[in-house]
Length: 134
Image 1: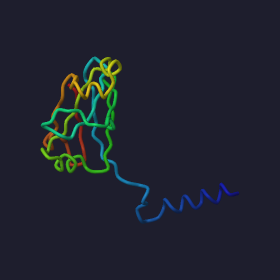
Image 2: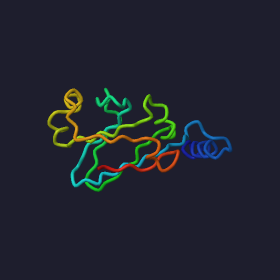
Image 3: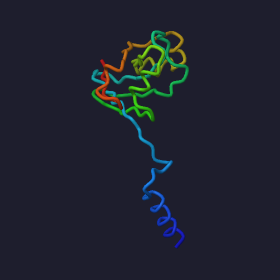
Image 4: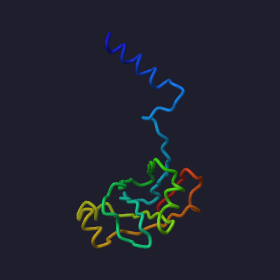
C-alpha cells in the first residue's frame, strides 16, 4: 500500500505544469573516434596552455569507430565563449600509454598523441554538435 501511495505522489510531482527542480536540460557534444585505435580523450579549457587539466573529470575511453555524448548543463557555445581564449581543447592519449603511466605522469610529461582546438565555429548549433578524431 505504501508503495502504491508513493507512486501516486511521485507521478503528481513529475506531472505538474511547472518544471521540476530535478529535471534539467543537458546539452550534448558528440565525440566520435574515427581512428583504428582505442583512444583516451580529455577536454581542456586553458588554450593556449597545452597542459592537461588537473583533474581527469572529462576523461573518456573510446574504441575504434565509437561515439559518446559529452553532457553539459550549459550550452556548449556559451561554455566555449566563456573560456579565456574561446577555444576548447580535445586531447587524445594512447590507451596503452595511459594504462602504463597513468593520467598524472602523462599530464606532467605532456605525453599525448595530439590535441584538437574546438571553437564556436566548429559547433553545428548553439547547444552542441559533433566533433571527431582525428
